[in-house]
Every structure is written in C-alpha cells, then in structure tokens.
Length: 373
Image (cartoon, helix red, strand yellow):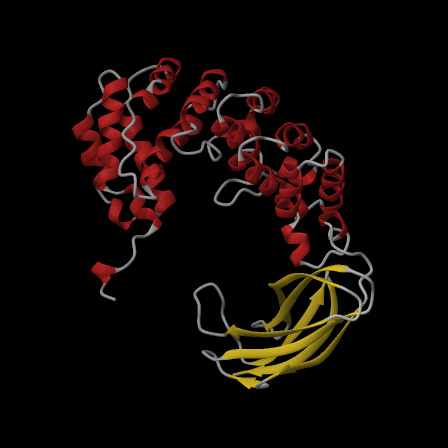
C-alpha cells in the first residue's frame, strides 16, 4: 500500500480541518479571538507532532489568542457547545478537535477550580473531559470529589460517565491517580451510584473503573462486586462480568462463582496434542483436545494460555478465550483451534521453548511444550 493510501493515523484527528473547526467555533464565543492567526500558528510544525503533542501545541496557540481573565474566559467556553462544529458524521476522529479545548481548562484553569469544573461539565459531551478532570482530583481533591458525586445524579449520561471514567485509577492515556491506586475506598460511593445506570455508556465506564482497581486491589474489587450482586440486577451482572475480565484472564478462581460458573470443577482432558511441535514465525499453531465432565451439570469457561519466550529467556503467559460451555456429567466436547504466529507490531517473538496450556474456570488442566524459530 502506498503511503498516500495508508490508513489515517490517530493524530490525523487534529489536522488542518480540525484546527479550522476549532477556530470557527471559538471566534463565535470568545470576544477578540484572532481566528486567522490562531490557524496559522497552530498549523506551523504540526505535521511533525504526534497526537498528544498536537493537543499541547494547539493549547499553546489558543492561549496566545485569549486575552481575558480566566474566570470570564471560562464562562465564554461554557457557551461553546451551542456553536460547536462537530465535523463529518462518518469521521470517527472528528471529536478529537474538542480535546485541546477541553484540556485547556486544566492547563490554565487549575488555580481556582470552581468555574473550570462548571466548564468541564458543559464541554464533556463534545469529547470526554476524563483527562482534564484528573489534575483537579490531584490538586483540589475535596472539592472535585464532591463534584464527582454530584455528577453521578446528572441528567446527561456524558456527565455521569465523567464521574466514573475521570476517576479511573489507571486511565489509558491519562495521568494515573496514585491515591486511588493505593486506596480505592473513595471510589465506592461513585461506583455504587452508577452500577445500575440506564446508560450502557456509563455502565461500561463503571466496569472499566473496577477493572483498573483489580490491578492493584483485587480483593477490594471482588468484595465490591459481591455487594453489587445483592441487587440481582441484569445491568449489575453485566458490569461484574466486564469488571472482572482481567482476573478471569489471569485465572483467579475466586471470580468464576461470582459470574455463575461452577466452583471446584471436575473435568478431564484427553487427546491433547499439537500438530507441529516446531513452528516458525508466520506459521499457525494447530492444537486439539477433548474435554469431559465428571460431575453433574457444570458451567465452564475454557481458555488456552500461551507462554511466550521473552528476551531474557523467561516465559510470559497470555490467556486467550476458547469457549463458555455447559456440560452434563459424562458429556465430552472436542476442541480444535489454531493460533497465528504472524509478525505483529504489538509483540516480539523470540526463538526457543514456548508452552501451551488449557485452563478451565481459571485452573490449568494440561500443558505442552513446543519450539518457535
């Protein structure tokens, strides 16, 4: 594929067209804003910048053109949604244009949080303010935390989601919140308010927040999910399944009963084999096995685990999904699967011993060696 035909990059969401949209919107709400100069300066050197660098670059250029006390400027920005140019409906990166406008609030409005928090509430549906709210949590904890609790009751799903997404301990692309990594207890009130939210958009954020928590405080997260189950609500059950996904993949056997899967499973594996015990990068690993149930009706999560050779010679495990099944006593099922070892940008392969394991409800029941070259 020629370079001119290559797929658009994430950073292309902040290109000349996006800058033009920002300028046309800001000039309508901020008195004295020099649209032409802003566009010229924003475009200078932008092609060499990556996505987040472009965000900061555009923030700087906006600041050069804003000639108002921040409190007054913040109120101007609150009117932005009324005139905002959302771009093309089919462009999934069109919303990125609002990112630097929203992050401007935390970069230049952090000193006094009252008005900026109002601004984030108004702007978050343009492009989630989940990144911009985090410095306020760090520097003005009590006031911001109270605002997060209030937002849980907001009419807008975008604002309610901001309460849970903005407080995630390990938000991707966002600054970490060490206070919640160390002690997630303050998040309980937020997550309890939103765990039965009518919006899937909000509930998915609640699940992501809890999944973040499982990375550092798995016991606390599991206990929270147990308390959610007392409601026996379908929405809550969905949240728990997605919130505990990392613990499911890691084989933490405590979480399977919470999701309705059998505890203390009794199964046996037979005819477990790999078609070719020596493969090369670019090949497929083909394997098969039979699974038999030795107990009355069991609900099972069947996964396979690949132990990849690392550069230092140690093995690193990664879990892959196979199937969720229900088996009666004496029933058996044949599994046949192939896993591609094609070169990908997210993984480096190293020659040497690798291993394949089968696990059921988090418990390993068989493992084989194979070689990769």
